[in-house]
Length: 75
Image 1 (tube, rainbow, N blue to C red):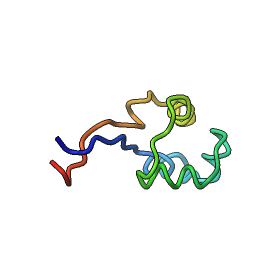
Image 2: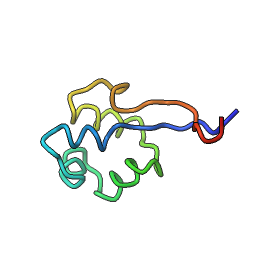
Image 3: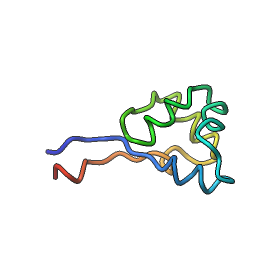
Image 4: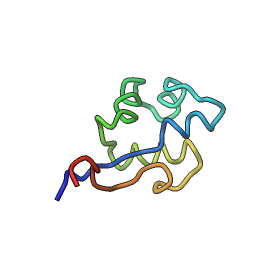
């Protein structure tokens, strides 16, 4: 079994929401820009609370922002 990871569509969603910057999203959800960078790169999995705040910032259900699956490189 490969490494399981939490992925996201944050970068694409920011672009589709008037090209929102990482800083704008960070300000909206109460984290640093560096946290958004780490999330987009897949280096950090958010807390459940932060995941919901990000989904709410895009007016989307959680499962349209985040996904859970296996790392295809290790399958």
